[in-house]
Length: 141
Image (cartoon, rainbow, N blue to C red):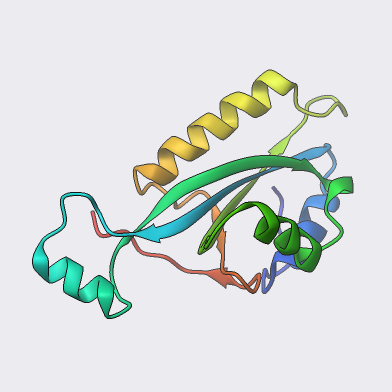
């Protein structure tokens, strides 16, 4: 996606996607903070104190730009279907030749996105908190 707009909110992400020459399909992976299955007692104590854990994908979804009015409506829809999500990872998949991406391309991109988020490879995505504010996340790998 071409930039030129500083991202200070989820709604800025939508504005930027709408300014692109090619049609965009937006991809999202909702995550929740979890304690790893093989956690140590120290990790459990830290997690109980509100620190640590990892972001685990729980739901992935794609939306066309016309399907999202803004963060408030999008988050409200998510709240109705996803328990205790913490962070949304977002990406835009451009179409080609003024045509939107194909359903197969969308499915493949979402699968890759879930796997890379699961593996902690998040640098190519924009992360948003529950308020729609962009986050800078560091991996501990």
